[in-house]
Each structure stands twice: as C-alpha cells, then as structure tokens.
Length: 202
Image (cartoon, rainbow, N blue to C red; front, side, top):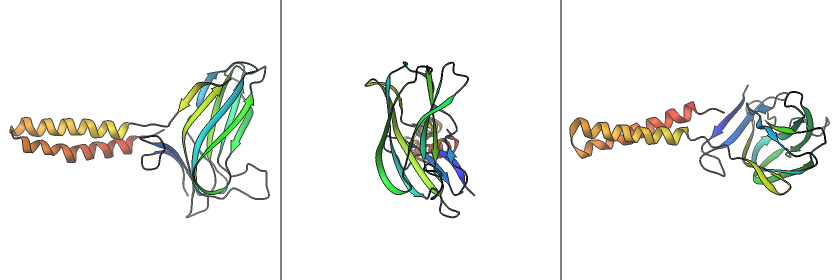
C-alpha cells in the first residue's frame, strides 16, 4: 500500500518541482503534510479567489457516496483566533486522468473569520495502480489583489549539485594542479544532486 506526498522534480509547471500526492487505497487521501497559507490574515467580508494548476492520473474516487469522497481536493478552513477552525469551502477535482488544468474557487470571508489555512489531499486509486495528483502554482487573491503564492519549489537537488560541482572541481584541481582533474566536478555534482533529491521532503 502506498500513501505519500512528495516533491516531484520531473513533473512540474514551475521549475524545479511540484507537489505530488499518491494513494492506492480506497479509504485514505494522500495529504500534504503541512497546511498551506497557515494563519493567513484575511479581511472579513472580502472576496477570496483561490486558484491552482493540477494534473492527475488514475484517481477513481468513489461512486454512489457523497460527491467529494475519494477525489483530490483543496479545502479551506477559517478561524477567528487561529485556534478553533471550521470548514469554509473546497475545490474538488474530477476523478480520472487529465493533463495540467487550472482550477479555481471563490468565497466570501465570514464575519467571524480572521485567518485561513488550506488542506491539500490527493484522491484514491487502486492497489497496483495508485491515484496520482500533481499540484503547482497555487495563488490566493483578496478583492483582486494577490496575498499568497505557493509554487512548491524545493531547491535541494539544485543546491546539492551546485555545491558538489564547486567542491569537486576545486578539490580536483587543487589536489593535482591539473585543469583536467577539475572534471571530477561532474560526478560529484551528480552525487550532490541525488543527495538533494533524496533529502527533499515537504
């Protein structure tokens, strides 16, 4: 059984990564491990527009139950004090497989809400054929003005590759005084990139 949420450095809209949620269970969404826009201050009575891009494979959902059961979704919660939260609204994705599409939803901030947070969940698949949802370029607008943006960027592999290249190249040259030995930067950069990839976590 697989239920996971990770950065994807291969499939994305905004370099270098996207959020990837995977589930092959019929009873558990793959939840992004941290709330998005946590404690974001909003104005009472303001119009919020939330939009993001999503791509999906093999999400089955569950027919014959409630509408949002088992499908990928972004849920919005509100609070007056950041301690007690209530569900406000949500954007559910259709089941199935589709390429990158823009999804959006709007809501009016209730009079008893001062801050919001977002929950991101990836829909169900099946054993051996998991449901996979990618999300990128999330934005929140308040009365038309951008107040929050999340592109799920994780630069660990790039930083690891860059540091590996510098360290390997400099070390190879300084140890031998021969420029050609600076080429050791290439495998060290690759190793640094791989280490960055493996250590990247939400």
